[in-house]
Amino acid sequence: MTEVITAPRLPGPERRKQLLDTALRVFARQGYHETSMNAVANEAGVTKPVLYQHFASKREMYSDLLRVTADRLADAITQTRLDLGAEDTRCKVEAGYLGFFRFFDAVPDAFSVLYGPSLGHDQELRHVAQRVQEEFAARMATFISEVDHEEAIIMAWGLNGLIEGLIRNWMHDGRRRSAEEMAALATRLAWDGMKSLA
Image (cartoon, rainbow, N blue to C red):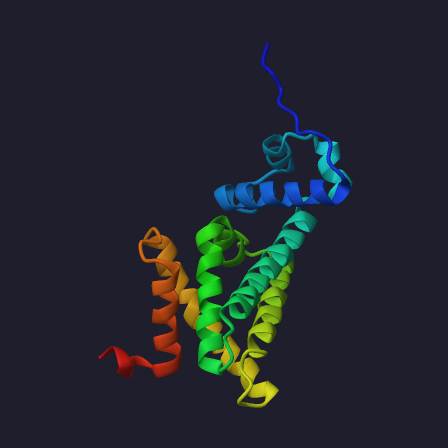
């Protein structure tokens, strides 16, 4: 007889967090369309009814996962800036990049969820992902105080585009360089431009 391993009873908020942590791993491994609620429930050690107590559908679970993961990333960036005591804009940007790389180094599955291609042509979820990116850019714009808010938003989108390209390469390359090395390189590209690398 096969032993079924079930998760211990947890308070609602803890269970929800545990389910989202599990969903992050499963979605990162299998992609959105290939992941079933059964797969998440099995990996979490709960029954499907327990899963549906917290999420009405796979779509709702994934939307929540996008938001929660993006919030965790933004919080990691803000905390790194605070920990380093970054005050001028260049130091804030470098601290932001460092928080970004450290987060994905610690939680590589988050990269697949936030930047992976698994959404395909699902317009509704793509819209959620777009909103998440807009909120993230708005948060990054608060680091840029030397220009007005509209220009800061534009610059934040540019910084996001640069970091996305770098992190895709870094993840594909097996994260061989440290988060600190990558943050320094990203800052040189963003702040000093290509001339500093010539």
